[in-house]
Image 1 (cartoon, rainbow, N blue to C red):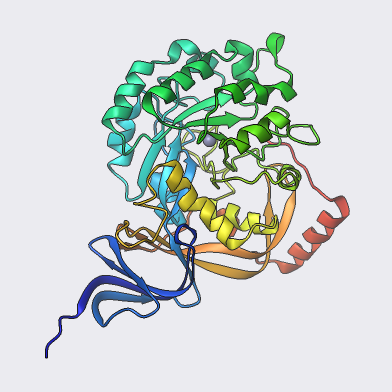
Image 2: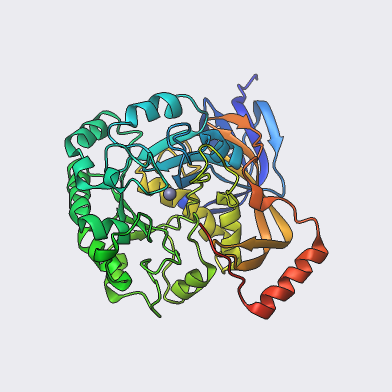
Amino acid sequence: MNQRLEQYDLVLKGGHVIDPGQCINGIYDVAIRDGKIKEISAKLPDHQAHETISVENKILCPGLIDLHTHVYEWVVSDSLCADDVGVNAGVTTVVDQGDCGSATFLGFKAYIVDKVQTDVRCFPCINMTGTVTPDSSRTALYGPDMVDIEALVSLATEYPHIIRGLKAHNESGALSRWGTEVLQLARKAADLTNLPLYIHIGELFDVNEANRPKPEQVIDKVIPFLKTGDLLTHCYSYRPDGLLGKRQNVPESLLEAVKNGVLLDLGHGVHFSFDIARRMLEQNLRPYTISSDVHGNFMIPHSDNTLDYSLCGIMSKLFGLGFTLEEVIAGVTIHPARVLKSETEIGTLQVGSRADITVIDLVEGNWLFHDSIGEQLVTKQKIVPILVVRAGRVIHPHGRLLRDLQPIKNLKQLAKTIDSVTDSKATKSPIK
Ligand SMILES: [Zn+2]
């Protein structure tokens, strides 16, 4: 009898599948058809496949989602190419945080979202022009006069698949100029659109010194505006007006907010501190989502010459701070997918979901990483993306921006560095 064989477009064979959304952690084959996950099984039924790739000894997980990137290339000067930050860095979905606003969103859609291979979503900035001048000197652009709630609501209604949240800032510069006026408008827009608020933490804009808020009071300004599902990013920022700042412990009000469902996001960027991370981890304050805040040089348009971190590098750093592999993968798959309210589509390998997959090599060794203020950390494993599947299509990431994952060639130099770290505990250097 001639039984009809299962037909697949692609089979990834024998990978160590980690899919925290489905509590899957083991060796499986993953079969793909028509751009969707068709089967995930320790033993696939008899089948024919257009292409079969062995991923034995590799980790296979849902395509990585980076909740904080800057990819409005050529419009916002520190924004980078979405595919360099996305599929070519092992990331299948990137979320642009605040580079466009209501007046510039349509350009973002036409020239970025509609053009690239990576799945691009965005949280528009609450102001009309987004982060068009990221050097933060043009503070007037971010004030309450630049907010058009009606325009935001209408765009969010028309493009619900792209606009998944709203970005606003709670830091000393904004508060010194407008108090909480912009935050009030952001709350109103979030309520009208039913979207989460994503709040930047840590000094950013030029501060009106005559009106500088006390750093330890800054977090309490925003908490009354937050609801369940809203996010605070740069959670391990070293800035004095950050979540921890110069305190021993974070305030009770923050613990209460987290207990009530406010989420923390890593947002590495240029303010991430291992020391702050360790101290907040002692209070069990862990990021729900792990994001990179990958961006270029603030001072030179379209230059990535200052970029020295990546999402996979950040995931590797978290091992050194004691996170488990499952926890790290959840922070870049199912958790951000839930924030985007897209968890049946991405961030999971459940049958029927889109075939967005990242295959990782977990490389053993002594790998040297540093935070934004120069403190160094050696980890035993690093995460290197080696293959991406995007809606069923195989992509080999070129990894141009994975500078923190380059092999450390000079082991003698590494040994010296480790000694000097042990001696001095932390090496600090100024940042811009
Ligand atoms: Zn950012």
